[in-house]
Image (spheres, rainbow, N blue to C red):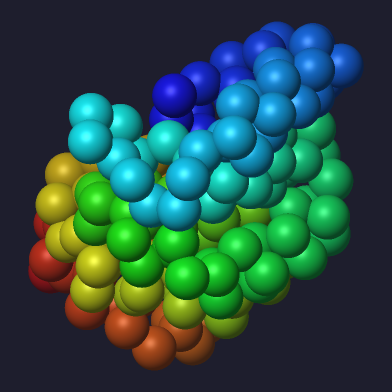
Length: 155
């Protein structure tokens, strides 16, 4: 179960349903022993917390999403997630920073995502949109001008 499994319910305005699904997932994750992931699903408590971040952002509560984000990325399990999960998640977090008008935060998340999983930033349409939105700022935040050039948004 990836964090992104719960987002569609939240994106359709079914916030209570999304919260119920996350709570059920949290119950399952709580019963897992350590980081024993023999099936390579990457499911566990950290993924459940990532889902809570994304659902809060979908709900329009960017403050809660970013508060949760700053906590979850400090957890030990964060670094154990596959790079592509972390990269995609950070692109979504960049979009959340944009909801608050925090271009520096968005830029930082994009640059971090690119360092973790460049393909998630350079090939994903959502990432290109977020890069374009951040690159419109004057001056363009550090690192974003380079990303905009790499993805073909500028010359």
